[in-house]
Image (cartoon, rainbow, N blue to C red; front, top):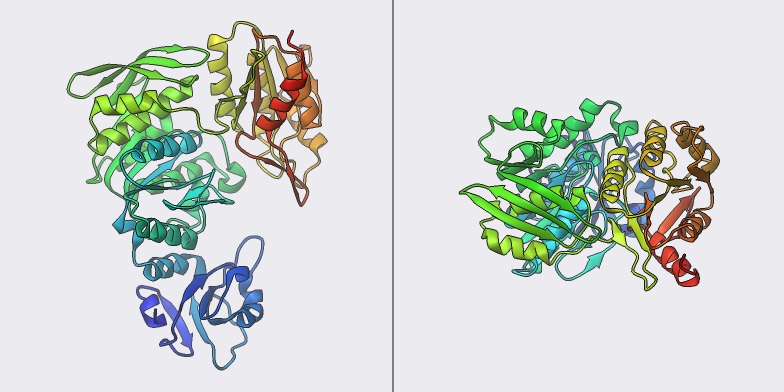
Length: 488
């Protein structure tokens, strides 16, 4: 594609070189630059990639999008803009020929539930047609499963994968949309057919600074939709967002348990291995819903799925049938299968609300004790650590506080922050810094009547310590320990 075509709608401050140069690839990662690439120099919080220009020339880059003055060299083209991050989304959209307008793009945002809802929708619609997925666990372009470092990747990655999905005959893409992505322009120039709001609880305030700014970031999704918006009205922030978008011409559906929505769950019954409720909906819908998953949060996730499927004109009985066949998403209240009758679950709960919800759900069906293993990530919000300590102690008969992904913090310092929320007068907590030993102690302490919850890492198969990423899978480790343990 000619550079001048690529720069359509980009506000260019200056252009040095030729705009007739042929661009075969657009990259922001200098390591991926190849012949005839346009390299986009991002001035990020951790690194300023303008310093990689010379290296990119050696790799074959012929053009550079810059926002700072650099040394110009004849034979190369330099395009200066006010903000390369903003301009990147326009360029990527042009390069991949507006892919979001050629596929049904459904975005899910909120603190908790994004992965489960997007995954459930993907599983349901894959029974009908080819589908793509972009989220925490992977990117699925309809033919290939790819790893991803972020819940929502960079704009170029998104546009590229949407383009590939179209080439692979995908009719839908179900996508998790993080607050970081919305505030950092990663999803600019994307057109969503449907936006889904799950909930909003304390998270990422180290980045957003205030809860209001966090909510406003999430709200941006609902100004990018063309067909429907779907909102959890049990969440006060969902109601605020709904009030703010009511005047848009985009129709909306709502869901809840405590407030009457388009779809409402009544008479909820939580069991160890399933959840049953009565669904109330439009046109006198009153149906029994049976989910082969435990937890009150699964009710909310299923309601969001029902709203979306209904908005996409799926028959309600067909929706109910599909729901009944769904299983928990990897690392989301996932049972560690074993032949010793132990109830050990792995869950991604890493926020106060998520931990509160999953422990409340366990409390509703447990026959014995609740044993909780959890820690908090390093170089992230310190404020939530004592809150999570208090929540874990409140609902658990035994809390084992351990290490999570300490990153560049000392695990002991993180644990000390958690312990600030612990009532020292109670003797229902232990500190075992080594996560494997903490899991081992929890399982050794459990009987077949108890529930062991290993929270915080879920699907993650690694542990980040300083600058090292080590193999560590809660589920795999728990299974190995169970196989060696005698049942009490």
